[in-house]
Length: 142
Ligand code: ZN
Image (tube, rainbow, N blue to C red; front, side):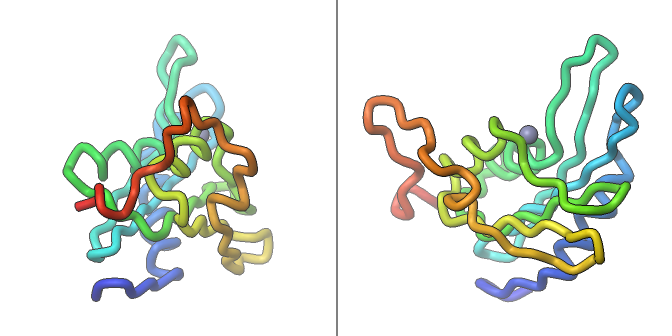
């Protein structure tokens, strides 16, 4: 994939494949996420539940995988639920995604299978900012 290109259908497909790795014995709610960087790398995630009801969302796994491998310039994130229909990020994930990528495109899949693109800033009005700390600036990204 070339820099700055975005193939929404490919990203949705990758997110759907990632949902197959979900560890969701309690909820049976399987979610996959695919996070695209400016340079064309894709980091995937699935939701993971533990036996004592701790867990983490698919999109947060994808974000942390990318960050832990040095990625900083994220452009789009597809989130797919195995059962179909849109699966918007929870409040915690919205805050984290906004902090690391305030212009991130969030791609959800509607009931009819069509993609719908949102911007994280639209999904998180009035984000928490401690001490005026802003999201990552472009100059801080690698
Ligand atoms: Zn979440």
